[in-house]
Length: 87
Image (tube, rainbow, N blue to C red):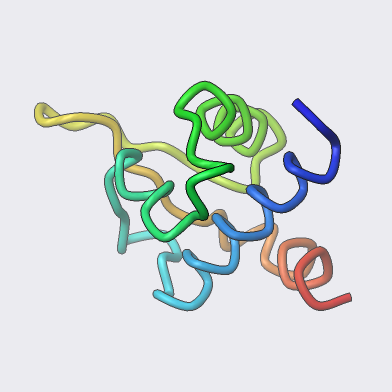
């Protein structure tokens, strides 16, 4: 995956979750994250790699449910997330 594609997907996912205020107790399905991405970036493997990296770095946290994996933004990393998006 190209570095610019990786960063574009990462910014898109984080902006989407910030815009929808998905902090701590509000969460969304992992399958909703690529919705809205341009077709050239919607490869499920690429999106999944970015999501896995966001989970490893702690920007996203996960909540396993009986109907699938739910994700939300880590409020403890809020300054870093906002800095990455708008800094």
